[in-house]
Amino acid sequence: MQKTGYVIRNMNDGDIPQVSEIDREAFPGESLFRPYTSYKQEIHNSLAHYIVACIENRAGLESIQQNKSSQQDMRKMSWFKCLLSRRHAVLLQGERHNLHNGESIVGFAGLWTMLDEAHITAIAVRKDYHRLGIGEGLLISIIEFANRLNANIVTLEVRASNLVAQSLYTKYGFRVVGRRTRYYSDNGEDALLMSTDTITSAPFQSQFQRLKEAHSLRWGISAAARLV
Image (cartoon, rainbow, N blue to C red; front, side):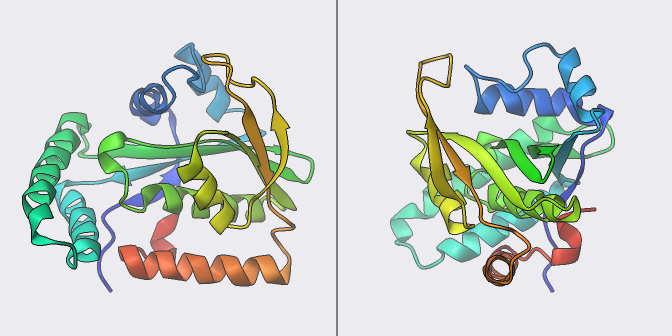
């Protein structure tokens, strides 16, 4: 089995500086926690649960880039130089964000639990690591987390204009159940409220396991390595 280029684990205090960077990059007008100290308060909140996607070393960076390239090898050769250029840029980005222990945070996700509902508060990936399956991996892990917390459904809000995210959520069984008018304060955009059906049901679990396996096969990520 091909070695995964990243792992997903629980967030800790030492991850806050990098998560803060990702938060502000992904949500410049609506960052999850505006005061820096709010991150620490949030991850120690008993109702909140946060995970991060980490690349542990340069080999990990090369691994996920090789996985991406293998998915694109049937494209026209005119894209070859572009792919090489992007790979070089991603490696440089990873080196710039490395911590002293050689670990770089490339994405994070969080949820709140309320009675039998798990509400996804955020899923974000560094821009230089988009289209590598990391966002989908975080979504899979957060749904698994919700299942372990005995949640019945998973909900979230998404910008009405964010069709890419909506497509991913729909793929994993989310459907639009409401609309929050002018929900986002930065531009007054509406939010769509999306929800799964019961995540412990046989139909949901059957589809979820199929999608999880397909994701693992495509990106070379084993189920055991998804959350540590």
